[in-house]
Length: 238
Image 1: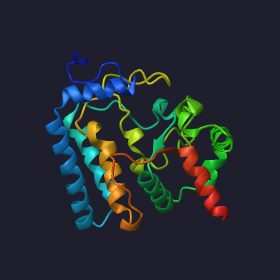
Image 2: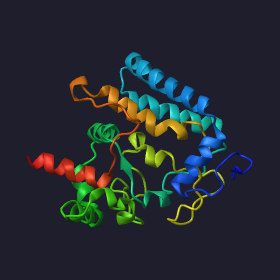
Image 3: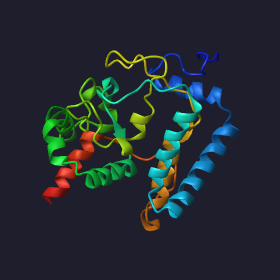
């Protein structure tokens, strides 16, 4: 397999098939490097969260931000550039808990978020209430080209500091995006992309009470933000 990269070592086809990206990362980084990065990030993140008295996930977010700022060409992304925010965004329970914490700290009205996102929330809710096999539903296609629930009228993310990995992995180095097709977005730049999802899954596993833990298999269930908002609303009603 030839590595389809530019001079900066980026996956030149941007946001293409995720299997292609996975294959690219495995060829770019050795299994040994990937395993070392995973082991280090899990333990270092948990240790630093204890000393700094914050959540392990926030420590990981700070690490990822620093890696992008220091180890790659300057980001072209900027506040108000929201083309990549018009797609389906999924996250784990751990990431959703971080979003809820951010919303509480910054006074984000989740009821208002739900109200302005009725179009996509209704689509997701209809599928959830149908008799369809949910594991066969193309959830992202269901809300493609629609604004993320947390995208403000000013084109800014209302929970930016705690946005999910889905959002953090869509970045632009070569140019400013001009459409919602994400053709300018790049991936495959840093080692963390190969292990980020597994690190988050492990952090969630280790934070789960032992009595509720299942054997760790490297992943955690993910849901669209619209789905999490529906669950949050139902919980408020109860």
